[in-house]
Length: 388
Length: 217
Image (cartoon, rainbow over all chains, first blue to last red; front, side, top):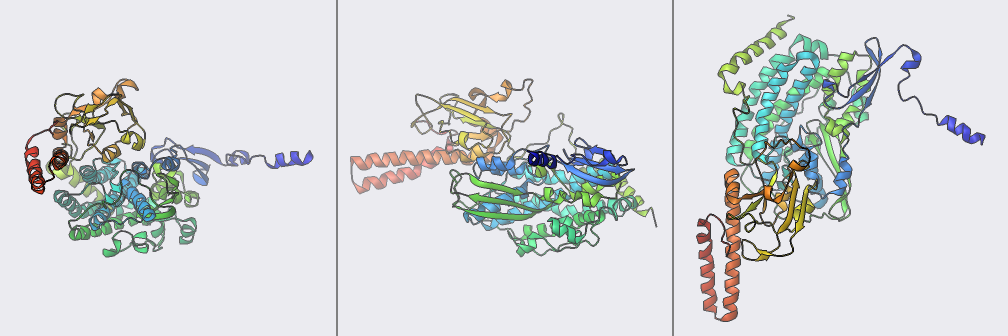
């Protein structure tokens, strides 16, 4: 009997909240989930010493929608529109990652034109994601509407392109297994080319506006430093990892799609602080414009979808596959196990934002509350993907 | 020198402020609802059912095969098959939906129902001003609300509707020709007669494409 009593005592829950209340020194503050700069419904339990963050515990799950279980209960094609809702800023890249893993699973070939269309749309997605991220980051810093509105103006042009191609601005649902749903006509390509050609002008302006600004530099340099070692150990990917100087881009490493055909560089940071992360996005947009220009020059007429793929009663063979791409935020992967049925046996998302968010505490310790918002903004999270 | 970055940024703001009066590119806001930007051809919102001709019941293309109901990811479609049959656009007796409901408060506009439909019976609408006072009933669209004419489809998706119509008339003509050829081949097993039948079959699509709606004979 006494043994069981002992185990009960040993099982006594550790305090859910931080030890702050008992120490009487730290002030525990719950930031979010309705805070406007938490990018959705994200909450942080922060223990403060004056204004300095001593402990930080992310609390999430407010937007949990059971995405993976829904994916296991619906057909392979039926999961495609749900992937739009993961990272709702980048539905095109989500579609691509999912299509890629199903194509790996079922051994489907993708025609050349479809691959070019996918590259074009993924890079346009990267442009609009990075542009709006910079706008949001500046907005978090207190620059309020101006940079955000400029970024959204450019984003709107790209969303209009998405709308005229796929039918929807954000929930594109455009990719299909073995290609794309509709073909882009010459008029669309010409319009897209025009918008991409004008994009560097916006970038020049935007860089003038923010990157040399002393306040931005003061707020971001040496804030939220991330060491390359910690980034690699924690599985951080995307611009956040490259800001620490680690040369890892899945477009180069895996060479999926037609990326090996394009000439582009991978910008690398040096310090791993918030300013480097911000710069990384600005530089990546320039490289994306280069990729897009090459893609517009190379795209040739042809079939845009593999017509052998069945729309109804699509059943991939038994097996498993993991397809991953370099989404604007980092590595986005889908892991699928097929038992030969119409639904996946297991459907797993490797979300970018969620993994990148795991080191938030390490980044924020020792900084002020105001810096937490900047650091969180530079991590680039979308709660739709974090909570799924 | 400290402060130049801020001044540079302010120059950008000034350029954008002044530019918004002169350059269309810098001011893209549209004063909805007085002004409206045109919807692109591919725009999609919620599905609707197509009927040929003028009679909503007789011309309904849907044959209640329930494929869309099964494939719909959020399962917002509800269909009850009829007991009797009515002739479809090819003259073949088919079932029709006794009940066809779409809960557009659940629908996520993914277009999968359109892609899986083998009869070109369900298409995407462009209507987007659908706010209602009630939460439940008024957002559950019944068959009568969902049925819209082929002319309406031509109006909202002109290019897509042309190809659909052409496919349908081609299919109808091919089926007609096949039926004819089979009947003639059965009646007289002469090879010359069969060749004449294929010649009429080739002439048929050109005649069918000129009429705006598929023949229901």
